[in-house]
Image (cartoon, rainbow, N blue to C red; front, side):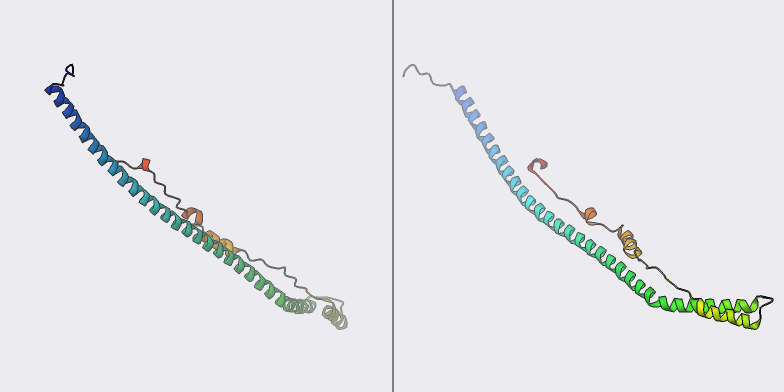
Length: 183
């Protein structure tokens, strides 16, 4: 053991200094690891908050979509009911229109016989013509059905500026550790 040479004071001081530097660096690494763990914990909490927010957005988008669908269905129903009512009104007034138009046509035809100069026609002939008009002239009012479709389409156009489910779909927020900046 006599051949062993002990390190000099300078070498011991250098080793002690290096040991101190390593100990200081180890403390800094430990502090950085603590900061990183804290950032990871914050990221996890933020991620949970983002997921909760995204869930609320999904619920809101679904609710808005259902309301728009319900409104469109209601407008289509209004169109159908208005069309049905109009067609019922047409059907109920058809006979009245035909009768009124027939009476008016007969009166005007008889009036024309009296007002037009028909030389050579006797009063009996004029009377026979008027009788023929009474017996043979009829007017048939055959209005076709009506379809009301503007209500829903006009309302849809008016709602066109309102936000639809697609326009309200805010989307999802994603945050990752790579998005954070550590100081």
